[in-house]
Length: 100
Image (cartoon, rainbow, N blue to C red):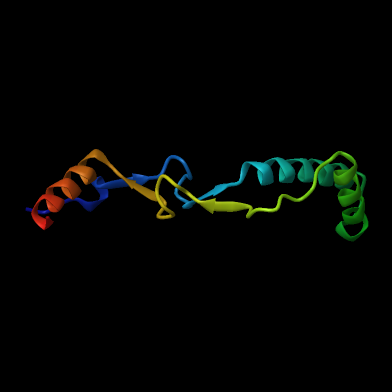
């Protein structure tokens, strides 16, 4: 009997297969930062010209870099990027039955 291994797991829906989740505080901070950067880029400014202005504007708006990491390991897939399907779980349960 041949087992189709592709049917045992699927891409993790929580992290879309990356194995990591963006921190919500960082996501909000970076979204605002990108919004401000785009504003300056449309004015024709280059990064070395607009970067100090971005930081100043962010602080004036009350945005400060969060203390924690930008992303963390996905709790659903434990950083694997995949989760077991129902077939995969059934196989694991079967194997555990004989390992105990």
